[in-house]
Amino acid sequence: MKTLTITRPDDLHLHVRNGAVLKMVIPHTARQFARAIIMPNLKPPVTNVAQALAYRDEILQAVPDGLDFTPLMTLYLTGSTPVTEIKKAAESEHIHAIKLYPAGATTNSDSGVADIKAVYPLFEAMEKHDLPLLIHGEVTDEQCDIFDRERLFIDTHLTAIADNFPALRVVVEHVTTKEAVQFVQSTGANIAATITPQHLLFNRNALLAGGIRPHYYCLPILKREVHRLALVAAATGGSPKFFLGTDSAPHLTSLKENSCGCAGCYSAHAALPLYAEAFERAGALDKLEGFASFYGADFYRLPRNAGTVTLEKTEWLVPASYGEGELTITPLKANESLSWQIRQV
Ligand code: DOR
Ligand code: ZN
Image (cartoon, rainbow, N blue to C red; front, side):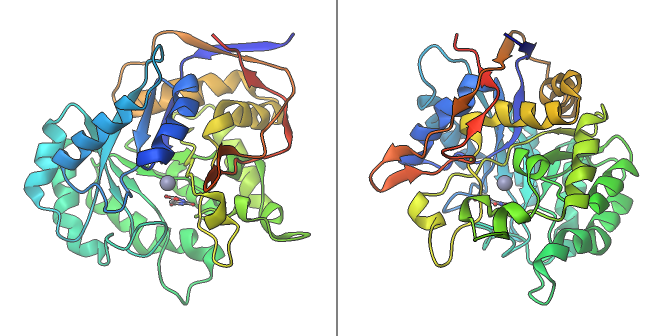
């Protein structure tokens, strides 16, 4: 049997929610990843260090016995975040970054930042305290076509942020366009990007051709094939500026299969197998370890993980759903087969 053993990886962009959904999804991630950057867009959002530490405890409670998993916490930036909270976050060993959601850009972003220039003093504090800024890079202008929102964000905001804060570490989260790839490649080592499995594997036809498929709807939305190809080249090219961040974002099936379905693909159940599929198709399985296990840790200045995880090339059928009753989540590739699986330990 074909196998691939790599250093234990990290997921540098993950939504786990709280309560019953948290308990359902954490085991999926903890089986594959040693650590994950936890997104703070709860209701209400995680805006200060005390809330992040309480949320961290809740996550740790949900880790099954025998698995060793560390949540890396983030704070949700608002227009009224005090500069002192940035310093406090930087001083906490458990807070690893600050997340910027432009207000209205995506799920639970209403409390996000409406005027990005107005929070420049907070970026200055992050630069000074060397705390990374994670950016959901889409403009929120309703006049802007949804397929152009990331591209426009680069010219409207990212270039200025990079110019004004040359030492600030920035992760452009879940890049989806060739323009975002080019932007990241053209900047210094302080600017990096995460790439999701769905943006490596699918273009917008998966969402819209032959019927509308809500489980492929996420933000930023899937783009044209030319963009997918640019993302595959970036992820498999061996550059330390691109690393794994699933953006696995669980929503109840009833809220996805809805006349106004929520944005988010649930991929934690099969994150590494999905990436392995994308890398294998590109003839670049040898590049998976750097992308999944080294570059993210290096960017966040964390030690690379000890231990390994083994993928086996054995076909398996992704379940139709996880959970039961109202509490059901439909995973990416539900009822379809995947060619790689995690070896059970
Ligand atoms: O599709 C998405 N879902 N994109 C995001 O930016 C947020 C996420 C979520 O929290 O559901
Ligand atoms: Zn996200």
